[in-house]
Length: 333
Ligand code: GTP
Ligand code: MG
Image (cartoon, rainbow, N blue to C red; front, side):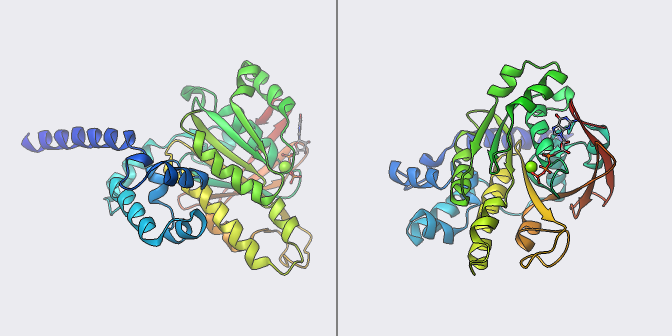
């Protein structure tokens, strides 16, 4: 009995502590004034959690903080976020609370253990016309559904690097679900990225309104296009990989900072080997991308509207496949 009471007390204290932390912002940290806050915000750091996850070297090099200041700030942020060890049961409790966004196909959802995960980064890769863009459109609609229907009652940010975002398609998908398409369109914030620097900047800017706009899904379609075209054949592959790496880490940090945010990016693969990517069906970006995403999905074409999704090295899902279709109404079984 006494033990039970104790546990209850602990969880009440935990809750209070959580609330206190949630109400803290960057400006509450020692030594952070308006100028430092602005620097941090410009780098896409808008919360204490994001700061706690930020590499100190980048704070010095990119954000322009002094080494000592950077160290102090990160340390203070990490203490507030209690980023030490925790028990596996605490980790399990947290994972049980993770919500998912339905893809629109029961088969596909089942493959994913219920849908696209929040608090994680999902990479969708495949050849052209395999449905990467269609899936990301569908997710922008589905994230707005209520919880009972597989949504998160939230809005979406869509970083479009190829100019293939189509409101017309969103309208079709929304109408197929009997949703008011005007509302659905309003809840999708689209950023057209014109080059890789712009893309990086947009991802950092996104951090600013995740909370304010109740954003539950962040899409980058596709992650690699600009990086590939800008750096090809210039002998600057290492430079490209470094930039891409830091961009992906910005995305990972966002997914880790917001438990209810799902981050999804797409990636092209080419079946035709070229001088850069010697291996057929290797996704561009090489190892950096493979290690940056929590769940990787490989798409390929089936008959007609059918597509096959395969889970590739997700930490908790078996390597299985599911068949889904791209229909007039969107993604279905
Ligand atoms: P890339 O960006 O070129 O690498 O391709 P992707 O993987 O993004 O392909 P995308 O998502 O654009 O999928 C294209 C496929 O979706 C095509 O095979 C189309 O037939 C199908 N599709 C797109 N719009 C519609 C539609 O309104 N109705 C139906 N039935 N299919 C559609
Ligand atoms: Mg596409």
